[in-house]
Picture 1: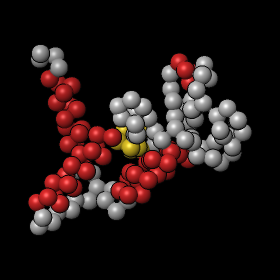
Picture 2: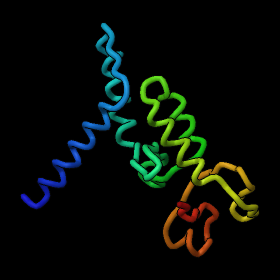
Picture 3: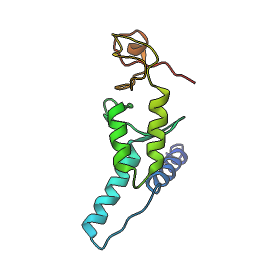
Length: 135
């Protein structure tokens, strides 16, 4: 079991660090404080660090991918606590913004993506949400 200890320890450190990002709010109400702590933990679990910054993935556990509208709503709701999340969401969506017209992909120039997909089905165009990595 010792082979798993270092990776698990690193994961725990990263998770605790994510939970501490942004502003901290406390009140005199225990229930309210518990609710805030749970919310911070949930956001930390859903947020993935991408090259463009943090992005709250949706559809956990089955989809676990970036959804355009969901990311924007989450970023807007968290803006007062963690503006870095909004910066990451906007940077990712700008990077994935459509530059072409595609009926299959429901894309037009300037349109924000609905969701992203990777893997065999996306590459074979069996589903419309495959995105090419743009640098």
